[in-house]
Image (tube, rainbow, N blue to C red; front, top):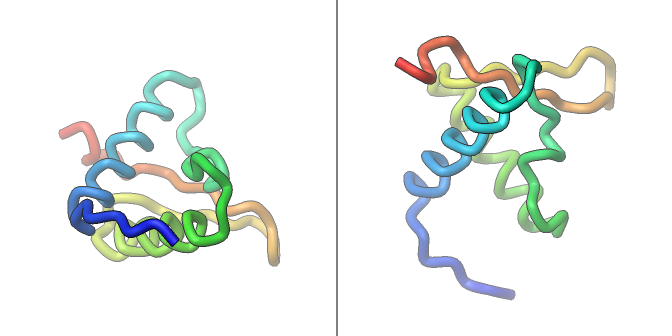
Length: 82
């Protein structure tokens, strides 16, 4: 297991920035969670999921899951660019 010394705040800020870039380069207002996962390792998925939940708690993103056990989509809130 690899130890990453990047701070939690830096990781969350990086994820939010990446989300903003993904949305700004497409016509979509939201991004599938899987798009935010780079390597696909279970540990990374869990870490990113926890970061997304923190961003939702901070009201910086909105999580959308239209059907039970369906794909999770993440939508940045309008204040992201402000």
